[in-house]
Length: 63
Image (tube, rainbow, N blue to C red; front, top):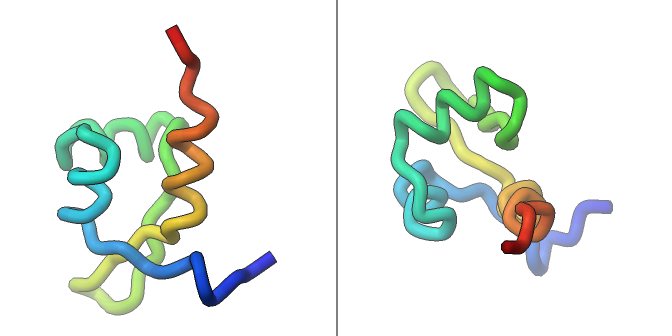
């Protein structure tokens, strides 16, 4: 369900800051199918859904 109060579109730099992984690793994981895909807003603008990034973080294995 979409919750406009908590779901927003994040730029790559924010995704990097939140996840702690770099651009190349993010795109590698997207290609492997192990990271949320970006939403393409225009030919030069992509964003990630904050709820999908948060879910990805929560599903990481705990060691």
